[in-house]
Length: 337
Image (cartoon, rainbow, N blue to C red; front, side):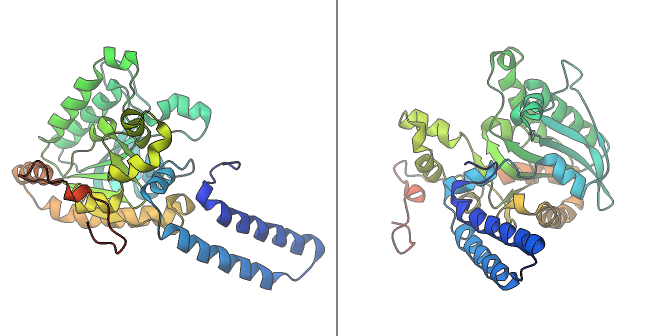
């Protein structure tokens, strides 16, 4: 990936766009009329983009989910939320910058925000710990959610992490306990909770703020108990097998919708969310609004029971311990073997 943010399978599109830029520069500097050539190349690039992004495999979706220019939680906050006030600290140890929390308004409705936040530069990523929370990040998130619960404010969470931070200092401060407590507490909150998977949904780091009445997922995100590389290292002792593990893990949005792990796929603009922040935020905002309205009419008891039933219905179950049909590969005609 020689150019920043250009994925291998995006390379042909990038090359065409660079040619368009060169022709535009020639038009400006030399006064040549190259409009027809530019129009032809732009049309060719658009068609190529449609072909490539219409048939991404799971590993390619993982790469798009990790795109360095992909919008993060704070980008959606700026585009969707007004009057946002950030809340800091867990009142026990520190303020974990890997999780962004606060309050604002979505179309006039007060909402609580809790989401993973990565950085754009190396310096920002070190400050944000690459979006991988410490225990204090999860404790900050549940502290803010309990405030929302007290004042009857709906909660929106945004999942985008490779996983919780696995370092020894995080373990010393109770990483597993913090995640488990968040999961337990989120099941008891009497306000609507809408979970939005906007990039990487990695393991307990994602689930620590991922319990909700509705789970929405951007089309080029992934949600998994383990990263494709981690799975490949365990099964084959070879991280190069990540494309294979990303397929068998069933971590892409279409597979998760089939397994009832998520409730709706929110389509990204052609080329991925990183190509158009505003359009992605608009689509996500519309999906949130559609699901939030019915939830607002429920009582606190109904919301808790709805959330409990929602998670109990997730996934594939069978009374036959040898039944693995859901994990079989489709045959050449697209039907299950």
